[in-house]
Image (tube, rainbow over all chains, first blue to last red; front, side):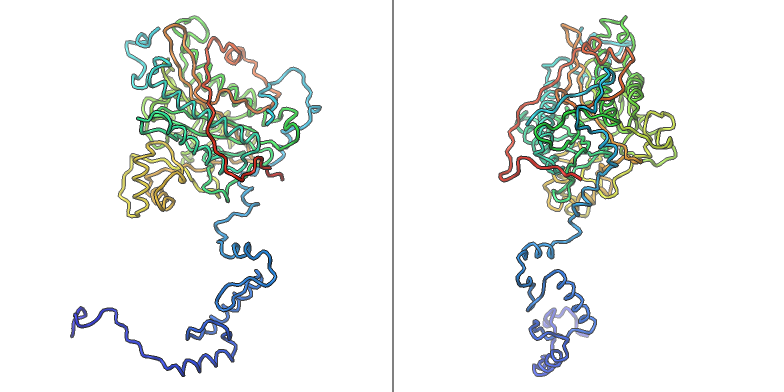
Length: 142
Length: 464
């Protein structure tokens, strides 16, 4: 048995049979007419399976909801969309790295009755009887 | 009376390596330098928050750390170890420690009425000044922001914390004239952990608040300020439990700290002490209180925040392990060379891939994370915190003085509590004369701060 490490044998050599160009064109023509592949899709010689086709259709629907479409393999914002850059940013940015504003503000939320009742904005509500403890003073003007 | 003459039972009581002989000694000057920087940075941050120039917590923390690094780099050029002894943290409402976000987008923005606790630490050659200050974030009401003091349980809490800190400082200062005036009430009794505990809890009881675990009044030394990763010996003072040690046993309030801290050892002139008081108006069930001490919140009520991951870590030099991950090895080298025994923030690491490396080190217990701890309860207890470092400075000419390194001179929030201290001994400590104790506050200095161009001068707070 010849050695696998023989110097006469090039490494990582892959023998590929040259497929018939006519056969590929025929397959593509059938795929386009059956609606599996769009006419302006990128030509790469592969025909997507039914599962992949369903997945692509589902993704197309989601992108349409976001106002984004794929034409010729490129992401294109819908015509007349003036906030295209922001939406592009929303599409490209991963949601898991960005906390929503409302969620962020809930990090240290407490029952407001403790704080609201404690902050008075009118001097008339204070009845000074000389007892108690006063601390600090009016804040300085900026 | 000179330091060498202070001898008790034939033994010298003060560690000469950490002894403070006078305000002009090299050790004292380093303490004062650290305190001046801490005071300057804290004053700046408090002013910026009060004037609504900073409302994003990331901006506050990042600015604080940057200013500390900037100012410490200007002094003591021949000293390598200096800088941040505690990363700037901003703990809000019922959070008691550890919140310092890593990026601006996910950071909390101060809202109307938030109780903000700013904490930071500076060290010069291991001589450390730690400080914390509590303030109320108030809304913008033109032309005057606040026309009346805040009242209610929040005011009680702030008053209790502030007065407890002042009273403890005065009590510690009484040791300076103990030998000159042994017949006085505060002259003939040693100031130990038990007396400090009684004083703080008495004030807490007066204002109907509870002491939160993590509070401590203890002696500090060079490089040793109570880090959980360091096993210290000969620690004196009193600690109301530890925040970091989570409740794992049936009686978590006993704690390991009780074995580590000598509560009967007395304070002596020439020592540096850390006064760290955290209190909250706890109105939950009795099971939330310490079984042995109903004036203290049980450690069971302290839980890590469910959504916030730790961003501050401390090297545990008791553990060593060779890491496979390249970024972990890089972070470990950087921490060992630059961070020493003090906590560090993830953002302050320059090693590529630092977050991943730190996570690997934390999993291997080589670094200990500082979790964001919250007080549980309904309604949520809002905690207030005051922390300061003081020097018990003896003097040959007079009775000596207490030097507050940082925290003095910053006016507390304007509050009015319906309670007041009636104990005559405590009132004497809180009076202007402070039972004969001289107090000196280290003042801050102006900082060179470059504002980012285009940034808004005044930021509006979140209003619900």
